[in-house]
Length: 144
Image (cartoon, rainbow, N blue to C red; front, side, top):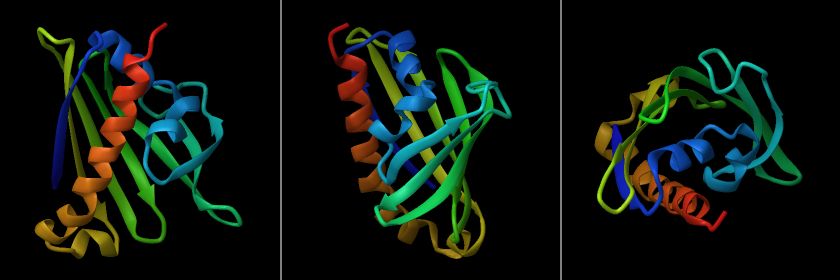
């Protein structure tokens, strides 16, 4: 499992607004390159973001599905990492004097990627997720 965190100078509700805007997913998730569709129940459990990963013309269609939704504190997602397997990504948001603290954890749950030692997986996931949170921070802190 990999864990990252950062402080965002925005209210938890503002952070959660970015987290749960399915159409902005590719703007802050490293690897996601475009959004093809967002199922109507999104961000409720069972709602799915249909996105692509990679760079044109080598795009792979993928999905991310909401498993648990507790605004503005927690969001649990099931991510598909084709052909490597599936994983779960959890975002926990809490209020701080500066605004919000967000903790992002990710772990592989199935497929070949889940066979990697946790330390090896963290070598790849930690820097990727640090950049994901940096992008999320930029979007959440932008002036309205």
